[in-house]
Length: 290
Length: 246
Picture 1 (cartoon, rainbow over the protein chains, first blue to last red):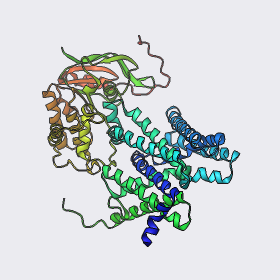
Picture 2: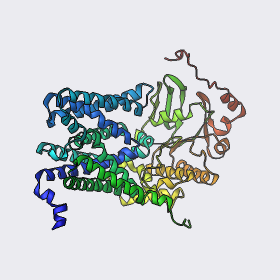
Picture 3: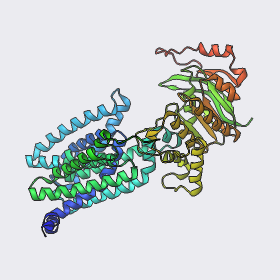
Picture 4: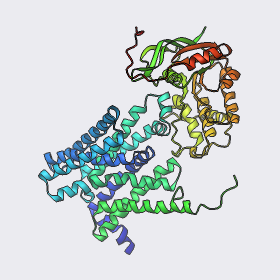
């Protein structure tokens, strides 16, 4: 009975907790696989930069219509696409590389976004934008999160081969197919889409955490790509559940707790991970015969 | 002569500076052609042009009765990211891309073909090895297996034997010879002239422009080689627009 009170009752008794759990699971299904590809493509910080880049667009939506789903989502998507395309153009046409131009864009975006929110809102609204409100997900937001997760999974399944080939050996893909460019663009669009979804629940600053932490952790646990994707998504879900339960009982903010749980799983993998964790590095065992 | 590749007044280069300048000529179908010349002669650039990854600045490359998909190209520095969690079998299977595309399955006969290719390059037993654990020579063997699976009519290899031991070179040369025997058109950029004399019936000596082309013995003469070496390699920032442009 006590275990039931601890682990199940919060969700059985409170609709907002069920909604939060559904939202967190939707985010955990789609985000971590994308995060894996971001890491494998050495674009981990790109995800972070894109997450910040969404802010001014969402803030403009907020300025126009307050805390409502539609305008903030559309604004966020538009801003994400503009920054992704803009930094790509800057990287190709000036001496700055992609990372430098992304860094420039996202710092401007973050400052601009916070300024725009402050124009109209209170500090509470600002906190909502920066750290999300996973406990206040309404029907429309839940449907948006579920739709984003579905679209992402279907798109990833369709693009899996060219995306893997492009990541492993871009020059080979270029020599056999013209799909390299479109694949990159669709991939970035999926990242933006998921960050916009994550933004609703976890806020600008933490949305990318649901993508990156489970992905990085999965890479420490297995060396098999397929297993990695499954493990990353499973960890995201576990972090979502555990974060919500702990935040409920301890009266702590849920968004940060979810990311903290993902961080805890990451730290565990960092130490114990069989595919590259610290323990394995420092106690590798006797060498083999051949 | 049955022509596989035809260059017409071809100029290839970067940022308007030519690396291959006003090239004319043909490559016969089924030819095994070594492409030689000093560094900066435009050998790699020519291969990129044929592979279609670099558009000509002027002139054209024609591949009669061949499509983009009939060309297999192995660039000089492999862009393989060895840290990606993928095994040898899967990399070799990439060679099936043109037949399988996004969703096509790999049939039993294609699986057998992949295994045969891996065996043919001497990597039997390495199928499940992560690429991260391969040595330089093993990596090159794996890339040759992928070329075998690609089953292309035209094969372009850019310095495929650089930094590779003699046993591996011998094994891979036998793969190249088998392609020649199959009447595939093979172009190989090489610096090792002894290897060229021994295994390549035809040679194209390049130094931005064609110095000589034809039977290897007649091309790789001391006069031709010294002529190729005298090519001006300096990059002229103040270069005028080419007067020979049509």
